[in-house]
Amino acid sequence: MALPSILVLISGNGSNLQALIDNCNSGKIPGKIIHVISSSSKAYGLERASQAGIPTMTHELKTYYRGIPKENKDARDEARAKFNKDLVNIIIGKLKPDVIVCAGWMLILSSDFLKPLHQAKIPIINLHPALPGQFEGTNAIERSWKAGQDGLVDKGGCMVHYVIEEVDKGTPLIVKEIDVKKESLEEWEARIHALEHEAIVEGTIEVLKQLNAK
Ligand SMILES: Nc1nc2c(c(=O)[nH]1)N[C@@H](CN(C=O)c1ccc(C(=O)N[C@@H](CCC(=O)O)C(=O)O)cc1)CN2
Ligand SMILES: NCC(=O)N[C@@H]1O[C@H](COP(=O)([O-])[O-])[C@@H](O)[C@H]1O
Image (cartoon, rainbow, N blue to C red; front, top):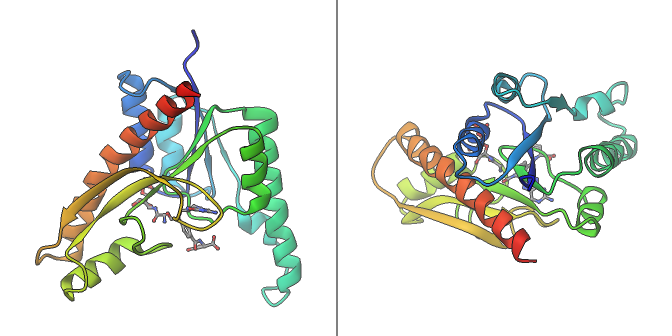
C-alpha cells in the first residue's frame, strides 16, 4: 500500500523540512514527501530537498507583482489573488498530496487558496514558533523572547496547528512549552528551534493519523 503523500511549503533555511525528510526516511513518519514548494528561489531548503531527491518548485509572489507599482494596491491585490489561485490549482490539479505541511512558509494564505483545499479534503498544517494565542504572525521568536525577559510571560514554545484563514488561530495538533529564563535571544531561539524539529515531526504524524481515522 502506497504511503500517504506530503507536500511541504517553505520559504527559507529548511531545517524543519530536513527534520521531515530525515523522519520520513527513517520510517518514523509514515508518509512520503512528494514535492517541496518554496516562496523564494533563494531558500536553502530547496537544496536540502534536491539532495534528498525530492522534486521542487518555486512560487514567488514577486513574480506576480512584477511591473505593478507599490502604490497600485488594487492591482497588487489582484496579483496576489492570482498567486494564491495558481498555487492551489497546481497543488490540487497536479501534485494531489494527501496533506500539506507549512514548514516556515512565510506568506498568509488566502481563502482563494484554503477553500478549494477544504473542498478537496486536503488538510494543511503549520509550524508556529509560539504558543496558542501568543505572538501570531512573524518574528514570534524575538517577540516572545522580549516578553519573557520583560517578565510579561513565563513560558514560550511552539505549536503545530491546522491552517485556517485567521492566521495562527487554527486548532493546535501539537503544543510544546519551555520555561522562560534569563538568556540571550540566541539561546532562546536555539531552544525553540530544537523544540520545533520535534513538533513538526509529531504534528505530521498526527495529521496523517487523523486522516486515516476518517
Ligand atoms: N491563512 C493563513 N495563512 C498562513 C498561516 C495561517 O495560520 N493562516 N500560517 C502562516 C505561517 N505564519 C506563522 O506561523 C505566518 C507567516 C507569514 C505571515 C505574514 O504576515 N506574512 C506577510 C509577509 C511577511 C514578510 O514578507 O516578511 C504576508 O503574507 O503578507 C504571517 C504568519 C502561513 N500562512
Ligand atoms: N510564522 C511562521 C514562522 O515564523 N515560521 C518559522 O520559520 C522558521 C523556519 O525555519 P526553517 O526554514 O529552518 O525550517 C521556523 O522557526 C518556523 O517556526
